Image 1 (spheres, helix red, strand yellow):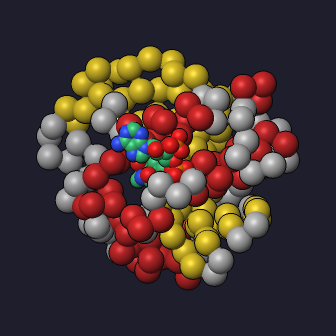
Image 2 (tube, helix red, strand yellow; image 1 turned 90 degrees about the horizontal axis):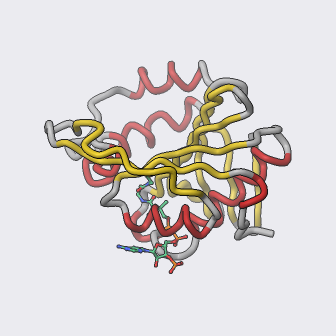
Image 3 (cartoon, helix red, strand yellow; image 1 turned 60 degrees about the vertical axis):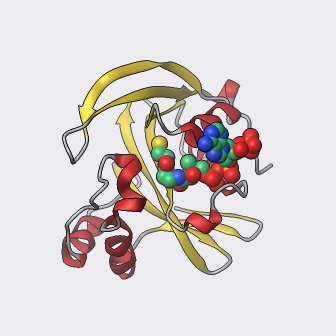
Length: 176
Ligand SMILES: CC(C)(COP(=O)(O)OP(=O)(O)OC[C@H]1O[C@@H](n2cnc3c(N)ncnc32)[C@H](O)[C@@H]1OP(=O)(O)O)[C@@H](O)C(=O)NCCC(=O)NCCS
C-alpha cells in the first residue's frame, strides 16, 4: 500500500522499520493508550518476522511519513464481510494536534473504500481517549456504544472502550 497526499505518505512497514517500531513499542508513554503503560517487551527480530507475514488481504502494518520522517504507524486488518479494522498511533508527540491524525486517517479510509472495496471501517478507543473520539467523530464515525470495564490493561486495571464504525455515506474526508 502506498498513499500520498501533499507532504504526507502512508507506506507499508518493512523489516527495515523493525528497529523503529521496537523503540516505539517499548515506550510506555507511546503505548499507554493501547493498554501497555510499561511498554511491550519484544525484539526487532520478532517484529521483523511478523512484518514479513503482512499482506494487504489479511493484515498490513503501515508507517506514517511527514516529508521523509517517520512519525507514527497505522494498521489495517481484514475482518471479512468487506470490513476493515484500523488503528493509528502518532508516536512523535510533537506532531499531535496539528490535524495530521484527521489527514492520515482520511487518506487511509479513502483508499480502503475507493481502491480496496471495503464497505465498513471499524475501530475502538478507550473512553479516556478524548482526542481520538473527537477525531473519529469529525471523520463521520458512528459511536456504537461503550463496553464498560471490558478489558484489563498491562497493570491489571479495568478499561472501558467505545466501538465505532464508518460507512462510505458518512465519511467526511480531510484530504480531498
Ligand atoms: C489520536 C490521534 C491519532 C489524533 O491525532 P492528531 O494528529 O493529534 O489529531 P488532529 O490534530 O487531527 O485532531 C485532534 C482533535 O482532538 C482534539 N483534542 C485534542 N486533545 C483533546 C482532549 N483532551 N479532549 C478533547 N479533544 C481533544 C483537538 O482539538 C482536535 O480537534 P479539532 O481539530 O476539532 O479541534 C493522536 O493523538 C495519537 O496518535 N495519539 C496516541 C495514540 C492513540 O491514542 N491512538 C488512537 C487509539 S484509538
